[in-house]
Length: 83
Image (cartoon, rainbow, N blue to C red):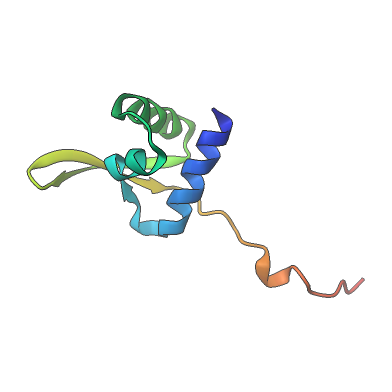
């Protein structure tokens, strides 16, 4: 379960503040909508994501937005240590 949670966060981090429709994410991860909805609710309760209700093509859906974008360490990875 934790691996799946991390994978969801990685996918949402790629989209940054734009987020992703809940249905798109579940199709990408090959989950059922039921499992996807339960995971989204769990992540929202944990404070990891924000679910925004949106009307898309005449149907109500949720846009999932990552609350805290992970910080990349690539810019300082090969920097010399100045101690």
